Image 1: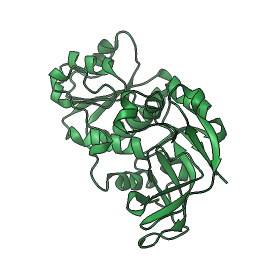
Image 2: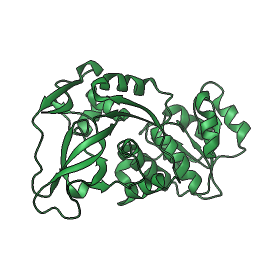
Image 3: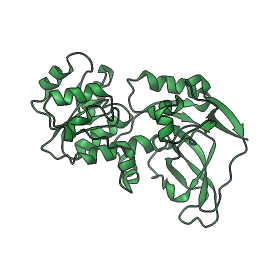
Image 4: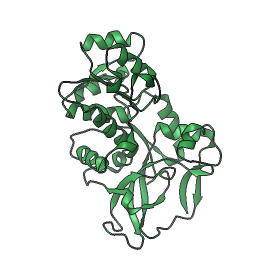
Length: 305
């Protein structure tokens, strides 16, 4: 029997449970993956609560849970080429990743670079695609100074480093416990909270772009600092102050090959994806409580193997 995280009704974290069932079988054009690690994302909690997020992704209970995964193919369906049993892979499968086994179309998985750990690969799909697409949407250059909010979080830490690779000066908001870490990456850290705009002005005279991974306060601060609305992108407050021309480019806009390219950068040590914590899948509720509490450094994951 295989374990999988599921919920039978929308609600709070208490509706999540670990269940068992027969392992699924790969059909034509599909592969079955024995999952090693599954990543958690804030959108999971929004879907679990029901409402707009659940409707957006067409989720109705009963349902599995999670999206990001990494593991090893243990069976290939008819007609599959390019992958074999024993290949290490990663990717995303909405509402199915937190399980011992998942079945996915072979063209939707990515080969895991040998130097990329399963834990990092299993946390990469949503955050990686969102960071890549949002950064590239602003066409950053060395002439830019960009504000990145939640710069130590799962999306923010990747976005900040990709912005640095584009040559931009990066100022990142984060809790004080993460400031030294951000300095080590080359990011100028600034604390959240009252007086944010003044603190931002103290560390940089002019801002030309902003990547919001936190919410309306970042957008308000960026506009107060003179950043044009068309050079602000948010993945956390889409629709907020839309009259300013603020974009909401996220992972769905990531170009083909973006995730594989980012995985190679992480595997090569050119970009860091810190793992905040790894919980056993039996403690998935605790893992989400930790995620919801915020002030993370990187990603929260659950281990299935």
